[in-house]
Amino acid sequence: MTSNDGAWRIVYRLARDPIPRGETFSLDAWVFSPDAPDAPRSDVRFSVDAAMPEHGHGMNRVPRIEAAGGGRFHAEGLLFHMPGKWELYFDVTRGPVTERAQTDVHLE
Image 1 (cartoon, rainbow, N blue to C red):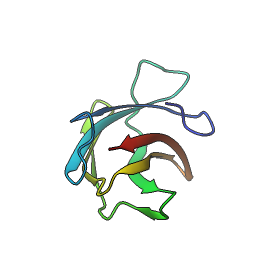
Image 2 (cartoon, helix red, strand yellow):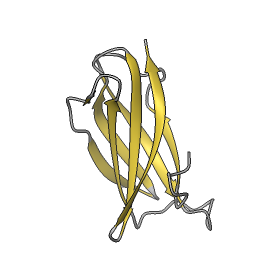
Image 3 (cartoon, rainbow, N blue to C red):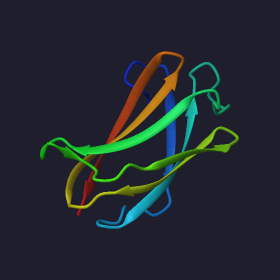
Image 4 (spheres, rainbow, N blue to C red):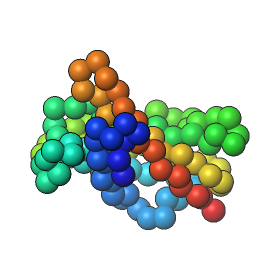
């Protein structure tokens, strides 16, 4: 997916697909810039969060993010505690600028 202003491309892989309801899950993500689409960036800060906009709340846990080397970021401890439409947020920060990418997740 591409971030909202187009500065970054984020590729992610879930450890378990589909995402389990009521159980923690993890994912790995890589951040790429448009001018180097085959070289993951390791000089950025990365975070993951999620929310249910239709319900007006987010996750009730804060995931742990670690730079896992080679431009890979590992996020664990995410939890979707109820079914419905979730938005999964990926924030990339370089210098003073943070840019977001998001995707919808529909959980049964």
